[in-house]
Length: 104
Image (cartoon, rainbow, N blue to C red; front, top):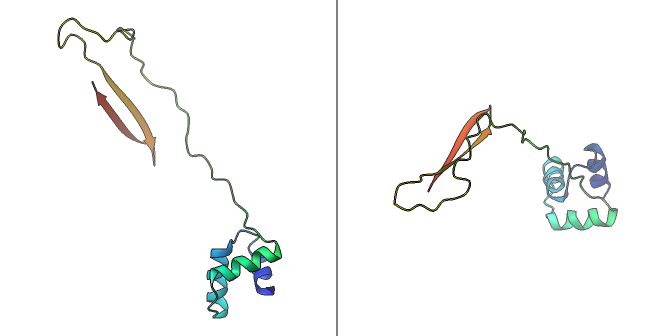
């Protein structure tokens, strides 16, 4: 239990029971099961600190917006009079673009 307490304080409470098990088994040549570490951490009242993940989404304004000619009137008298498509553009990585097209 003192080793668990010491390792917990050394890492500022970031280690959970899985990482704590790996750390203790490697550093002290133990063969301790993760369930035992979980039970001992519960007795000591130690819990890992869950850090919030940073959002990577950046809002952007569309560069070109097409005029709404159909005004949601998709019915046509003959085949092939009205053709519509939807293009969605995502940026990922180093501002690379991925384009999704859906043709109707």
